[in-house]
Image 1 (cartoon, each protein chain N blue to C red):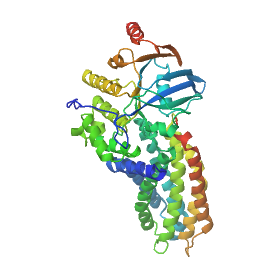
Image 2: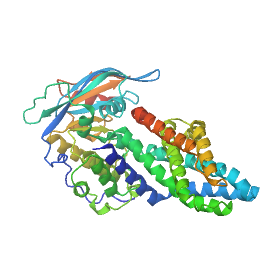
Image 3: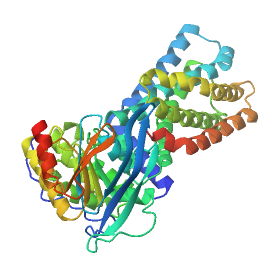
Image 4: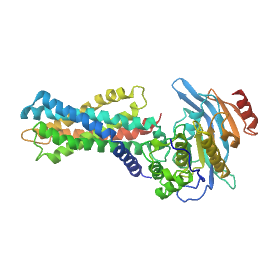
Length: 263
Length: 224
């Protein structure tokens, strides 16, 4: 299994076609969001206002609804009831745009997601995977974006390697490179640290710290012992599809410490 | 981005993956070849029997081979959850479906291009003089097969017994297409050969109706 040899330099949210580095951030509002699968309630009336630049840690036991909430935010799933509103905001001014928010298709251009699995084609090379998504996001020069992303994730030497042959850590780096390729303003992370070794987990934390400093809004579903939690500006605990606790106006530290001690 | 452009990117991806793995085409071709060869030896048909039964045999071979090939087109995406990655991109669901349909059409058309000459030799059916009209019938029939097949492959991909579900759902729906394709092909292989325009029109109508239906339900199809 290939090791995490070359450390990535930086992955940034340099923005889509223009190459302008993250001038906008995205706010997300969940308004009474409910999701049912048949008779099973995955989410029950979630109302959550996430500010531009927030790093929200989404916590809770298995089946609490964390992944469902992220999938709804990513437009991968439609809420049974309620709605999700995306609002672009200037990072410098911090003021939101007025109106009914950004329509779904436009919002998709501003969202990146790292799933529980890497969401990569195993039979394509690292470069082919990234180029495919660069084309789907209609980036100006897919080859250049691909080369830049591979360099930034430390995978330039394995650009022509088939993803099937990659280690978990390398796949996760590539998954993050794919998610950041189009310069998203909102990054959704579904337990991105699962199965990563210490070195890879440290790299992930470092990358997320960089993104946070750039003002990228992030929502990360994770467990209470994740290293990346130190970056969280807010913690939301889900239980049975409802918000059990939310540190909206305070330090998430005490809640995280309590959850760690309970685990 | 236009639907056509997005679909062409998905098509290119499908072709690239197939060229690398050769999973779909080889399985489809071998299966269809076995059916045609086995029937040829089992029944040893006379030229008149070939003209009468050959078209049905040919289309049944395409149908079963097609259902074998269509299943992995969505099952492969499910294995690594890459359908989510495609759906995250700012392209329409119809573009994804259209790209998959186009890829399946190419794979089945390649298999048919190899199989039809072998069929003509084994069953002593002359293709000279009817080739272009036969290509029209094959194209319309194959298009209908892959449009309906891709839609049902997307539906069955969410079910528990997906390998079994696809043929169970697909074959009854394709029965009218099969009848029309067989009749149109039989009229071409008759003596004298002629093209039954009514059946060709039926094939074209089937394609249009199913393409329209797939456009209407594509968002629902690709959601979990």
